[in-house]
Length: 382
Ligand SMILES: *Cc1c(COP(=O)(O)O)cnc(C)c1O
Image 1 (cartoon, rainbow, N blue to C red):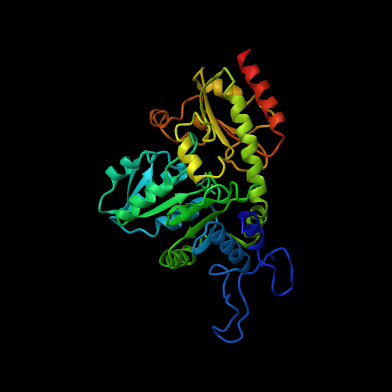
Image 2: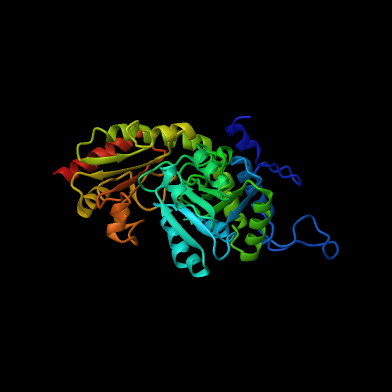
C-alpha cells in the first residue's frame, strides 16, 4: 500500500459509534468495574484513546514499533535524552535545532551527559568523534537553516558498529519525504508543530521507536514525566496528518519553482535548497528523500543585518514569523530571530550569515509568491 492510502486508513473508525473522525476523548479518568478492571484506560496521563490513535498513526508513518505524542517537539527531545545516564555521550550534528542545543547545554550537561558537535555531512567526522561512551548519534537532515543533508543509512551503520543508536530529528523532511527507520535509524523525533500539524495552529512533538526495549522505556518516561499531548491537540495533529501527502507535494513543487527563480536574483550571494543540483549535498538528498521540502535559505551580497531586515519586512504574502511547514508562507531572519541567542562568531561559522533569510514556502500559488519576492527585492535595490 502506498503512503497516501496508508495514512488515511491507519486512522481508525471509532468502534463504539462508527464515527469516521477520531473522537476527542476529553477526559482525565475512566470508570472501572472493579479495582484494576477497565477497558485499557485508567488515567489520561498514562493513556488516552485520542492520543493513542495519533501514536499508532505516527508509528505506522515512520515504520516503527511504537509512537508517543508529547506536548512539544522539545518535550519529545527531552524524553529521548532521558534514555541516557550520567557518563553517556551524544555525538550530535553541529547545526542542531537551537532548543536541543539549549536543553543539552544547560540541563543535561548538569546531569553528566556530554555532547560533542560535529559536521555530520562527513561520516569521517562522526567516526573521529565516537568514543566508548557514545550512546547516541543525533542528527537532523535537512538541518536548519542551511539545509545540510547527512547520509542516514551510512551513519546508522557507524552507530551500530560502535554500540550506539542513531536518533534522527525528521522534522524538516516529514515522513512524507523521508523515513529514517527504513534507512536504519533507531529513534525518530518530530516537532509535529511543523509539517505534521501543518496549519501553524498547535505545538506538539512525537517520538517513534524501532526497538521494543526503547518503546517500553519511552512509554515509562512519558508517563513518569507527564509531558503528554492533550486530546484536542492530538486530534488536530491527526487531522493535519490526513492531508500530509497532498500538502507536502504542493509545498515541494512551490519551493522548487521559487528556488529556481531565486537562482536568477542578482542580490543573492548563497542559495540553499537541497532540490537544486548546485546544493552541496544534493546527491545524498536525492538518494534518501522523495522530495526536498519547503524551506529555502539565502544570503545577500550586501551581507548585513539591515539588508536582510529590509527584505523580510518588504514581503507581503510571506509573513515575518518563526516556524515552518504551515499553509501560509513565512519569512524569517535567523540572525535576529531563531539564532539570536547564538554568539555572532559561532553563528557565522555555522553558515548563518548576518544577511541569511529563511523562507518557509506555503500552499499559495507559486507565481503569486514569486511576484511577492520580486517586489521585495526591487524595494531593497532602490
Ligand atoms: C521546531 C523544531 C523543534 C522543536 O519543536 P517545538 O514543537 O517547537 O518544541 C525541534 N527540532 C526541529 C528540527 C524543529 O524545527
